[in-house]
Image (cartoon, rainbow, N blue to C red; front, side, top):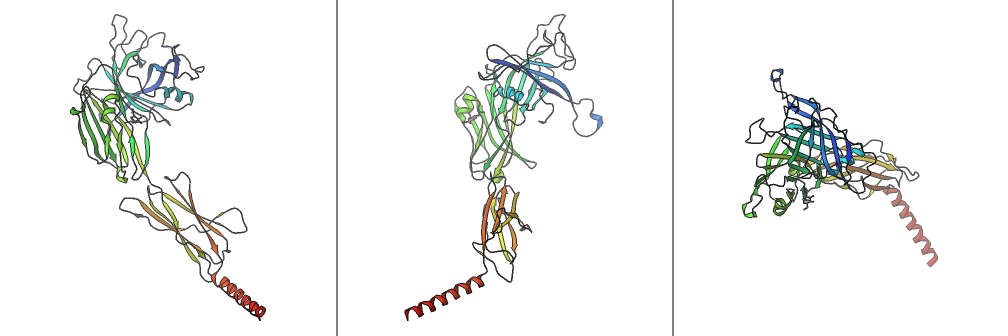
Length: 431
Ligand SMILES: *[C@@H]1O[C@H](CO)[C@@H](O)[C@H](O)[C@H]1NC(C)=O
């Protein structure tokens, strides 16, 4: 349920010591309880909300002139939903990107929803929220779990109208990040039979919340799902306590990096077409779990060749020429034909683009496809015919060419005549 909702229009405020506050426009997403009678599907309501991330580290070479300070409303408003994240530990990885996104006017997607930890009562105190944060066009994505901080209540304490939670004196909902799962890649392409590392990591509050961590990598493709790898481990323990359950040969997570850094990136070796799909990295930590989604695309460039090594025009009948694209993936490939007469400099599009064979699929699920053209006898010798192939796995189109040769009969008689004349000439001279 990760969707594009609201885009970030935000302001930043920089402190003297190289940290900045990032203010994000988000939307609070709630299941439309009580609207059940309105028919099919879950209904969600979206309410504008603001998330203030305090103390995001800013690089020294950052230009900060354009940043506008964030000022909390002078009169606290119980209708506003203003999350304030005060504690900077655990640090949000790559959060500096949020500043860059601001400068480059990239959209930030920020969605907040109520979160009920497993095994805890709904509506218990403290309250929890899940924040999904990503930047369009950047490889940055994270799911944060926020926990509300206690508020010293007195007569003046306001309660947020929608969430029924006490507000701080400046009218914000004070929270801290207790757990997050992140990835620095949303989509990755890898060659067939190659290897890939699907990036995923987690961070938790310094105090060990839960000694046990569970990791699950799943693959979802065309409506089908399967577990790829599962690891259960005790964070404060040796690797002896780790239970690894791999369902795909050649899938692994570095155990040491898992324990020391929370790096749960999964490596896959010997990639096959069936490995393609949507990978979901889920980390379970005590009552909490959060996930990241990464797309894996398998790409394999075509082997391109022409059917003929030599193309000699025949006076009477047209010649056939084929361009073969072999063993590529995915299916979409484009073949175009061009010709360049010897007297010209610009290649022209072939009058009748080739007829395509139906594609064939091989055992390794790669495809092959051919395009056939007819070369008319009217073509002048010396004309260059080119097949241009474009495919996702090719950074640039591939070209294969052939130069049309004069009809065999002509040149044959010409060469023979020349030979006869030469022989006669020498015969005369020798005599
Ligand atoms: C995990 O480690 C690999 C290298 O071993 C690195 O490339 C990757 O960025 C790390 N990922 C996270 C989430 O820390």
